[in-house]
Image (cartoon, rainbow, N blue to C red; front, side, top):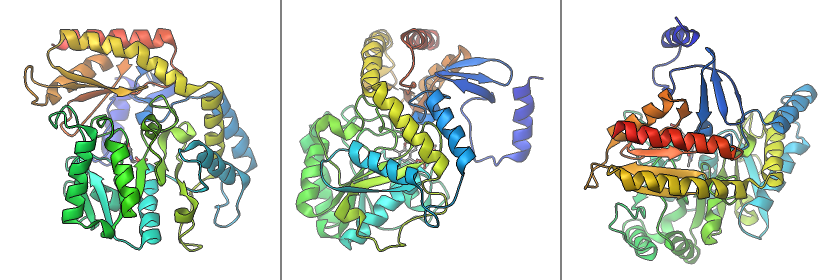
Length: 426
Ligand code: PLZ
């Protein structure tokens, strides 16, 4: 029996069944873009721990910053005895997120917690109750963020009742909405909100600029700017969930920048700290400062080890220009994925930006989702040493999230494996 097989047995007896894993093997160590399991098998990592290790596994500067911080102190609680690195991460977030206005930030532990806090802040600042979220949205697994998340299985099923005052609006999804223009898709949202909710009741409009778990859905051009414009006019707080798209992933520091959309609040997590748990809410000072002293916080929010990792990760992104690296990954992968699409009738669309790329699979000649096809391609990749993920409301989207430090040779090898996996399963 391999060590991984033994661990699978121990896991079944010890770990709650509700937590799933993509890979059946257990990790021993990971460096750069490569994961090695306890039996010595290796995978090229096109998942990055779901868009987290943008700077690569065990980036030396992150390892060193974490080591040094652990030796100084690991926890005092910022609400009890504050420290510089928390302030420094907030300064970085205020400088890096879109918008030249005065900003403030808050640090928490997870993406879901960041979204929860963004909504708390928007409600407090506006005195309004309602939140508008989108079809295919994913925002987390806590009670409020389950309510904000669109998909029932596996995220919500039998986990309710859910938080109230969440209203679902149609997303711009060019492949599946008949190619509605961005402004027309936004008009559809505005009409629904004004008729069914009332703009004056809406605290926040919450949107992933490119949807993550929902299928790497890139809205039509003009959708986000039109919603931004409406939110401004209606006094609605525009909240961008940049948790999966942030920190150079899409070829810019934040995905909103592609259309020069400036959110009022931005939720960040994942890529911010190179694998340590950290998340943030950043935005207009007058909104962020609305809540009373003591109204925001948490025991571990902005933990000093996570903050040290974040400062090191941001330093790497800046020095190595990982936004440009993500655009280079796109330039290499895009024609390769289109070559697969030209050959394989299951491919309905290749989409994404930077190093956030996806292939949506359907039954040939239709728009009927083909989740079995996506699962088969992904499994073939795993068997050949490439770690890929699927996503999408229908589970029919293969997604690529390589570390942004991946080498040209590694990227080429991964794309070869992917190409062969499509060929083998068609
Ligand atoms: N918002 C846009 O992508 C996390 C979750 C995977 P947490 N996505 C991966 C799973 O099945 O749990 C995510 C996201 C967007 C919010 C979140 C939530 O971030 O750090 O997982 O809470």
